[in-house]
Length: 158
Image (cartoon, rainbow, N blue to C red; front, side, top):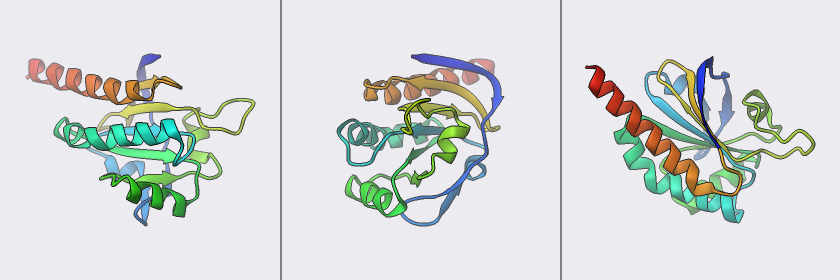
């Protein structure tokens, strides 16, 4: 399901991330952020989704966006996952689902993160939300499509 959102401020966060160090929402101020949540490192769909974002990262950057993955695994697992799949973007560890809860992407009856992607605009507002639990590739396609449309709209407005 693809959903454009109203002007809702993105919840602030700070977390440990690969390859070591911390990331926060404020680190991305002034550019778009493609923030994707995934249920588990080294699982089939999460791996494919991460590879998809890895392969699209250069185009996303050309469109003015950075990428950040968030999953529940411990930092050492996230670091191994990012290194193994050679991501050019960090993957944050959210072992207590604190970030996921703030973004309302935890299943109500299960302590498991949903597969949801957000596009956060340069001012820190949620511009779009994409939720396709099994269609991991749609997240990459939707983020690219949204950012291409945003660029086209901005160019028309100039």
